[in-house]
Length: 137
Image 1 (cartoon, rainbow, N blue to C red):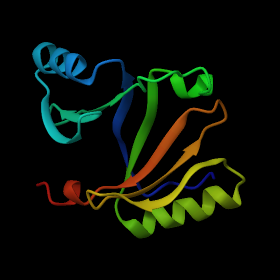
Image 2: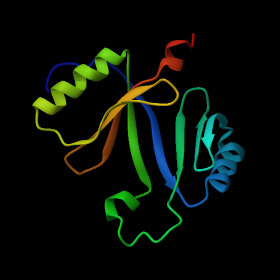
Image 3: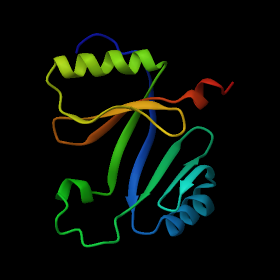
């Protein structure tokens, strides 16, 4: 994988938090971030207009059965691609290179398209096409 990628850079950082609303207020009040999407009570997406932060609620149930890597506060990094085809090409190349695929290709409820892979240290990375970004000037 030594050739240049067709990605547009780091799109977002996603954090797991104990209380989405408390964390949302923190980032709104201290950093001036605004909610750009609030799909359900366990998830909120904030932005400064440049930087993007996703907050995901930690599970409230017993987590003794959950792998420790899934309890780390960093949920994932998200790299933005220019098109769904670029996401598919990246998926094919990562698969051919033997990269661990965490979640397969999938179209999301907001129209975005992505898959998740693991880096050598098992950090999760989302490779993402997000149509709303393409609409922004």
